[in-house]
Amino acid sequence: MTKPHVLLLGEIIHATAEWEALSDVATLSVCDSPTKEDFIKDLAGKYSDIAAVYHMNDSKAASVMDKDIIDALPPSLKFICHNGAGYDMINVNACTEKGILMSNTPGTVDDATADVNMFLILGALREFSLSMSTLRKGNWNKGVPLSHDPEGKVLGILGMGGIGRAVKRRAEGFGMITQYHNRKPLSNEMAAGAKYVGFDELLATSDVISLNLPLNAHTRHIINKEAFGKMKDGVVIANTARGAVIDEQALVDALESGKVRCVGLDVFEAEPKIHPGLLANEKVILLPHVGTRTYETQKKMEIQVIENVRSAITEAKLLTIVPEHMHLV
Image 1: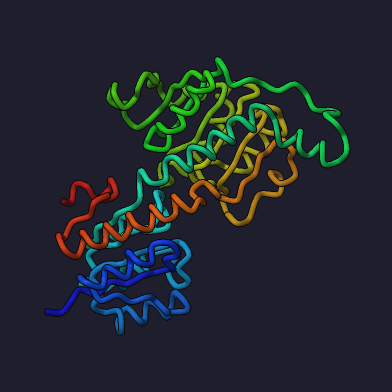
Image 2: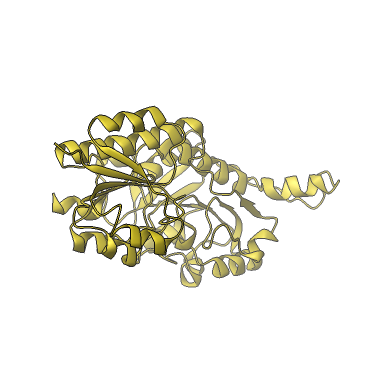
């Protein structure tokens, strides 16, 4: 009996043994198409029988799986297993139309991302970026104003999924009071004492706003000029979600006006490009999207994708199917 064909888009670094072990149930290939155009041609040739795809953001040919690529996928392809919690680089609607199911890696990214998120919250509250910049210029605290403690501050979490809840647990260790907004309230057990509020109320009453929501058509630029206008003067913001949930020009304007006191960013709207107004502002803490960049987390993510691939080809189901496709199974 012919084994199903599995295609790797990208490179596995840490879980190579687990990937190779998949060969007991599948024929494994690594995509060598140099460009998107070549990949689309190869989908009608050497990859015309693939049953599942392991997708990574570093794929040369298909880092972004847009409608052109999805439409070109062969009828045999039923599963896309993505390495990452966020999957805005894959056209989910096109997958749905074609009957392709997707998985991602929720859970495994929560702790590492929440650690970075908490670092950004603390760093922004204490204005460490300004302090460090001043020190490097040879000025010991010259011109550096007093900053703020986290204790007693109201933390508004926009998006209380796994990462948001992990941020909540860490923030409570610093004495912060948590409220959140989701599309719908969590169960009392999952909320664990956090207060559910409307979007506008979260903006108006939070001292610190943590962005932990996915990027989609509804959340793109959800933090815009109008949203900043509803926030407290001197609000602090941290973003480890996706850069495009913030209108970066509106953020630059809010920083310059003092509406936003300080911000911590691990993600950017057009990364790796960064808005010049953010680079120039000493009240902005900048990290190059390092939320999940630890050895332990990266290996766990790779293994989780491989487990999804194995389940897909042996049991025709995904272990961590994306929410948009849950109704299809």
